[in-house]
Image (cartoon, rainbow, N blue to C red; front, side, top):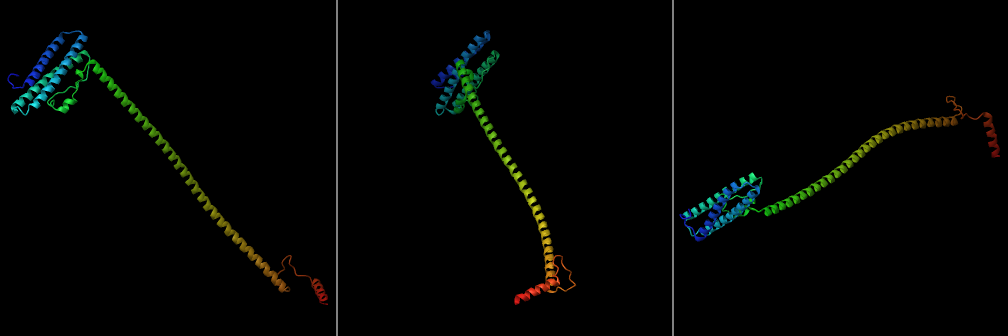
Length: 270
């Protein structure tokens, strides 16, 4: 395919290196089938993973060279070069899937984050692409430790948020309890005031009745006193009036007494 497609010297060199890596990957996986020791299989997978990582780097470099030469090549040549790049990506992904199958069989389940599909030429997508299987054991350990630290920090932040939420809830409950107690006291005070108003109303009514009764008694006493005074005056003015009965204790003076009073008065004139 390389002889039929016109390429620059740089593209020819990169394409040749990628072809050599694909050949090494094919031989490595065939050799892996013959290895029975799990430790040796794991070591062989690490070597193959390193080759796949190098192949990925070369494919990116191949893509950059295509873009640099895009203006100098005819559209048909650019199309064929892009198709060749996609073919390389597809072949690399087949080896990545094969490596994942061997890893699962070994019980070493690593996270696969490698993806170079049709959008593999996108620079932003390429920067975000990461293949955990292409990392060494120490890198995987470091990444795992970093993730654990981040998880611990996230847990601590969540605990702080929960504690703050509980504290706010407790403070709110205290405030609500205080407000409820205050409302209860206000209701009790209103009941007391209402009861006092009722008692005061009853007391006013009772006082009104007593005052009315006292007024009637005083008026009656006043009439009696006025009558007694009138009788006394009439008796004094007209003592011989037989129509008016004598009031006990207020009987007119005896005749001898009147004569004695007259003599004494006469002597006084002399």
